[in-house]
Image 1: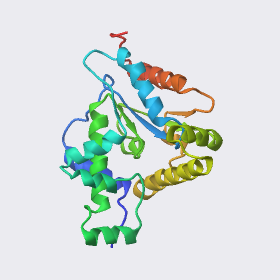
Image 2: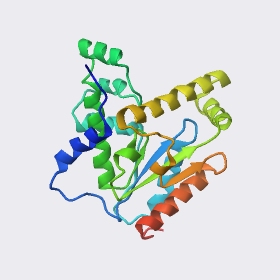
Image 3: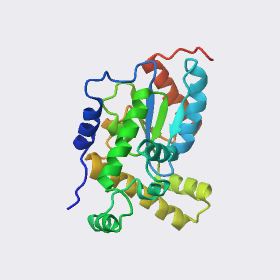
Image 4: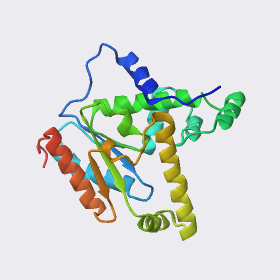
Length: 236
């Protein structure tokens, strides 16, 4: 019977692959993970953060956001069909659904897909100058010294208003959308990595986007990363 891959198994998988190699990533090549409540501005803050960091980063290093692009990178790294993207939601599938999919041959076992996603996240973060949004990237990269972890939160009311505007949904549909998305993110973290997504100890910085604008949030994160990793302002 299928069972969930654990965080320790994920790390074991990666450690075997990189055994004997020096750890990638340095103070000069930091990475950032952004965990977010639905509607708290994860993608917007990530975009503004790139705009803030790029001119303050040494020449030759370009910042890249991996959100939806992360799935494309996983498919590329592991030579998977693009149709597999539909089976890589940030959620946990029931044992029954997993068994049915395996019988029908729709995709590799979910445990395998999660391992591949973990490996891609680890490699991207190790190389540096990436912003990884979601998918438990903060837990996966917790032992990498070049990674800075951020959590974005906000009140339900304000997040509903944002989702209504961005997705052009009515209030009830926006609320349901948030509930589904937040439940999926929480379950993904708990089921596959054994961590609570709201645990503040998993992050260097937790920002309430009710109180702090997206621009201010991006600047706060950017300044923290610049100071922590002593980035030079060679291109300012």
